[in-house]
Length: 220
Image (cartoon, rainbow, N blue to C red):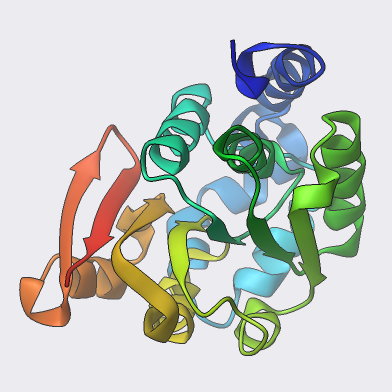
């Protein structure tokens, strides 16, 4: 038995995933004007604030499969220091914190620029009994992740504004341990990021995983 598969976390996650599936922007008429421009907005380094601001009441969660993958990667690598870009309602955060709990402890830094989402994430982590493992940072990740990082980072989840993936990676890169894993959700919207991590000359080994995840490893 694991923290992920037992109460209080298992039923909490089941409810959060059900809610996320029922509240997709693709099926909500209120967001019809955004769907057609979604590709351009997610790739933009200037328009992402308004795009994600419109989505502030939606979970924008990782898939159930990606959540389990995150837990498995963190457990198998015995991660002790994790950084997450894009907290949203904390569904991915719960998976990563559960792995830290089952690894014997550690520190998860997660950052989110939308205050209302961060408040909901904090409540969800408290309900899951995992809040003590998480440091929540509010604001623009280009600032919140500029200082106060662990000397050694074992695992990174990129799941915020896709256009910022290269810049966020650059901030974290000096702290990445050899063999550190980087999971980038919806990385197809970040071609500059993919160019970097798919080149061994830049110090990474990388492969697409599933429909929308890029899994990379820091070399040497």
